[in-house]
Amino acid sequence: MERYYRPEIETAPREEILKIQNEKIVKQVRHVYDNVEYYRKLMDEKGVKPEDIKGVEDIHKLPFLKKDDLRECYPYGLLAVDLKDCVRIQSTSGTTGKRVVAFYTQHDIDLWEECCARAIVAAGGTNEDVVQVCYGYGLFTGGAGLHGGAHKVGALTLPMSSGNTERQIQFMMDLNSTILCCTPSYAAFIAESLKERGYKPEDNKLKAGIFGAEPWTEEMRKSIEEGLGIKAYDIYGLTETSGPGVAFECSEQKGMHINEDHFYAEIIDPDTGEVLPEGEKGELVFTALDKEAFPLLRYRTRDICILTRGKCSCGRTHVKMCKPMGRSDDMLIIRGVNVFPSQIETVLLNEGYTPNYMIYVDRKNNTDTLDIDVELSPDKFSDNIAEMQEMEKKLAAAMRTMLGIGPKIHLVAPKTIQRSEGKAVRVIDNRKLHD
Ligand code: DLL
Image (spheres, rainbow, N blue to C red):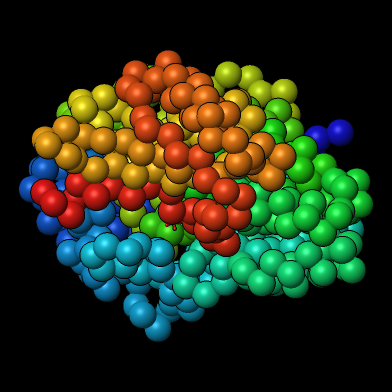
């Protein structure tokens, strides 16, 4: 039987959700206009006043916020409450430019942790579970968010943080963890490490995993589910909107329900900014409806996505987002062709290879090149060069069919590609260095 953390909200009729959203947005726009000078200026420039926003149908009148605005406002420029009312700061893992710092009041923390609690319950979590959190703790929102959510559910929480895989496995087996929370790439690594130590999927007590923070394919889901003997659920979120839990998967495992009583989602055309109708692919934009300290309105996530409102078998009524199809800035344009790393992962897993790979893009003699290192599992590895070359050719052909361009494949020995404990880095684009 499906269980919910807040049934009255999660299964509320559409009209009721809309009513909640309309009430919240009116208050929220007033709060931001009165307290955030930067956004007030953007609204004034656009000629929009708080009184013009009477409900969510007016949200499209508001200006967008982009990552650049956040950089410009670093660190306090978008803060909407007194600093003394904030109880926490978290930050993005960003490697370029300034990091985004997000502020939280206690109300914001409660709201965020509740979103994570909803995700854990949707994955079958109860107070009888042992939740092993191996997302990074610290500034990254993964550890803190799922940790808080697990507490709210009343589960026994194992605050492992990421890394030290030996210890992760020891605790998982000794303390009978039932729910695993980490990035999908780290889950794949844990599965591989368990197998190497001679454990079979049925030897652990895990029943579910809550995996997110990076794109992952359906093929990767299947491989993790088989490797660990669990059901693998997706979870989405970003530091700017609080962290994980903005959206989460239910038993249907087909798209993630957005916590619409807290976050209003739109899909826009990334070039024109125009709002697209339901079912169309575009950039995901979020408005935080009731966050106090760092209440971003119409924040452009750069994640490419589709929203759908069809009836869900789990009984939840909140809108669903599909798996993000990569960020608009993750998309590689190689010889004019759009390539998403997720397409490469799909081909690899379909062809029976491991999810351990590295993509290298470069430009030689004014032509883009695409090279993919693919790690072989020990059973596929051989010193027969002709055989290896034949496999490389076959894989390159399968890639060409999927991508529209042919990469150069390099099969590499088992254990030669570095494993990820957090967000996996799988693309190195050397063109950026030359341009
Ligand atoms: O990654 C928050 C998080 C922690 C989500 C743990 C889920 C689990 P940031 O570091 O700010 O926050 O990165 C946010 O990561 O805009 C997406 O591009 C990507 N992302 C997050 N979840 C998913 C997912 C956290 N389930 C950025 N699928 C977002 C694909 C995801 N991409």
